[in-house]
Length: 100
Image (cartoon, rainbow, N blue to C red):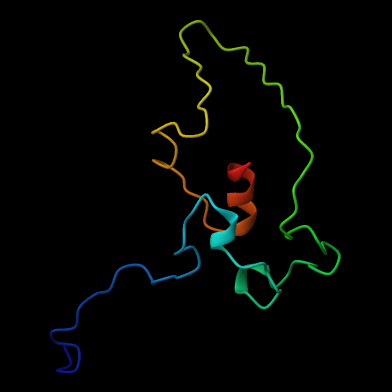
């Protein structure tokens, strides 16, 4: 074994800062410009205004679940302490969906 490799430490997975910021508030994320790595192939000109801070008309969503009797189904409301345990949004688009 070469002396240059002796004592070398094997590193784990590469460090990524891609989703380092996590929040439910869209204001915590800048509006994409297209220069960000995760947006580089997205036609942002065609999506102009999609990421702007604008109030949307109030809407209602109906949810129907046809689950087997042994499956428990619960609707987690905003503020439920279980929210964010397994997933916290890491960009403006996903945080916006959870924020409203």
